[in-house]
Length: 229
Ligand code: CA
Image 1 (cartoon, rainbow, N blue to C red):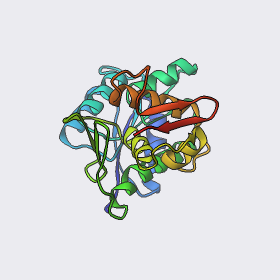
Image 2 (image 1 turned 45 degrees about the horizontal axis):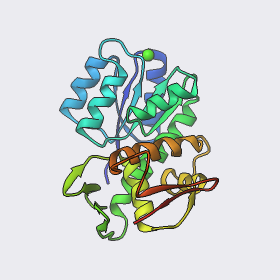
Image 3 (image 1 turned 180 degrees about the horizontal axis):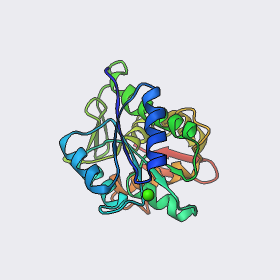
Image 4 (image 1 turned 90 degrees about the vertical axis):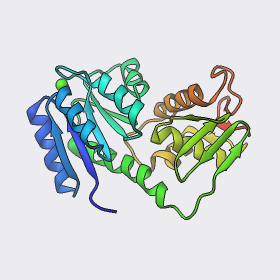
């Protein structure tokens, strides 16, 4: 695998430059965009392996860039946000971000999250020889990382796919949120268990007929979740 590419979209020069510098030092191929239009021009010409996206941008907002990315790719997104409340963080994840970092953040923390996201989105592709699974109405293809529901292809983010894959390979096994954090996000001190809850909700919205009464991803009260095939 060659050098991994990262697009940093941030209008504040000091943050943009420091983040780019650190990532370059870690060996990534880094491009930067100072506003939403520049970011869109970059993305339309080539998709990086990961996007670091500031939510508050001039011109095209971070939110609409995230929406565009989610419609057109499964490129992972780490969102930078100045918003502190839990509701705002959850909103960032709902826009399709794989992770978020609240400003002010340490560059070391951001780099550690970049590594974690890239590790899980790229390593799974070269894992041994995973075979497709058929569960209920779901056809899950780990090589193409696609899921078909009743014959229709459904687009999942990298994280949603990883979650589904862990569940589908271990039917009826109960996982705690901490176990899912380890399995899907890898060892990362900076991510808390509420992230799991948000991604479970999003996964249900995509694969369940009635997300509030899930058939596949079931809540085991007081413990965690299990997958009912
Ligand atoms: Ca900004």
